[in-house]
Image (cartoon, rainbow, N blue to C red; front, side, top):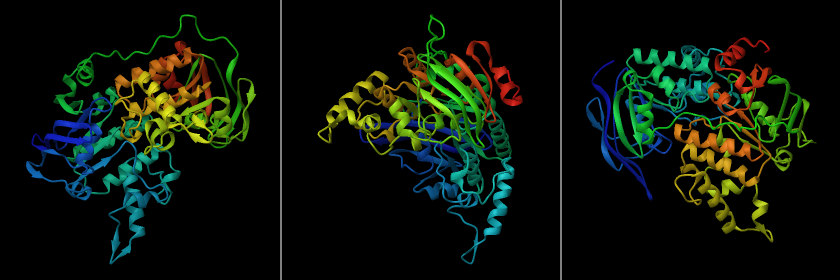
Length: 503
């Protein structure tokens, strides 16, 4: 690792109407290092990397590249320096092929003619370098899993002469094997002198892959250049939050697990090629967790329960009433709500106001003589956002402008308003900081305590075990274990998902 900084940012300020997003950020990144950028949602991390990628222009401050001042006036100017950014919400074109996405904007051509054969060959080389030769260059990106799309996005970054790679929550859609492979690629890149800025809320990952740390809070740098191996986790949490937060889950009720009749009953559910023979029951007040690797079929099970996928066999009942297969309206009418994994693309209307996102499933409640009572919508939404501590306050704000944790609260507020009987949560804390995680855990437990039947999918085994009353372990589309969360530990879950032996 070279001690001379490749990138230096000094006093970076960025203002938006009524908001100071960055209030004087300092950052120094060396060639060949993994520099971890930490901070709660809303701390300014996303704004900072958008300044680096020239999506935003800073109002004050300077950027130095190899010690010389530069002006990143356009995204192309940033890329010309060798800065590549992979955002948490991938910016791929679903209808284009893998190869077309990788070389989009810098297509391989001769005399104006596209070199399709060379493009495919180079694509295969890049995917092999990333350990994913099984991804076909000619396949449409929209047909790939989120994990495979992440790999394509990385391949696109590597297809250019990258000197600084920015990774925003890169492990959010990856299982442990994929994370290990990601770390291998990062180590290969840094060994070649590439600098990596790594953003993650998973502090255990920082320990594994990082060299130094910069912490942001409320748009300002509160610490920079911290050595990973010399900075306790408790210190990092205090820096990020301004207080000490214990990473604990809300206690389960003293009365023991619910014993009433199931609210949700699933018998013999099957989706060809994805999962088969799924049996599941959830009682009022119970949280049931689905653990397993990415691609095991967990998310697809939730989507099928919600009616977004049509099963080939099986029965789903809510409060004893059988649901029509493949019908979202029927599921919602029966009281089923879904907070999807991809909340920005599947769960939110990003360019609509917060209140519109909350009331979208209950608009009939605010309709009078065929007209929406927007004042009533705003009033009820404001009550919910205040109770959930959605920040910043104000229900007329576009939901796009909220941090990930606050966007998730908006999704949950929607189903609180709907008063759903069954709540399906897919990766509920993906991209959410430690402070907001604790708030979401408490909210989920309070919903269960109020009588809602909750099903949780999470890639973090600790989260599944800590939040749930019962756990189902899913491997390659089959349930290989079911039992109380307190009777299985993390190592046993990992054994099951790797070996698949029925327990």
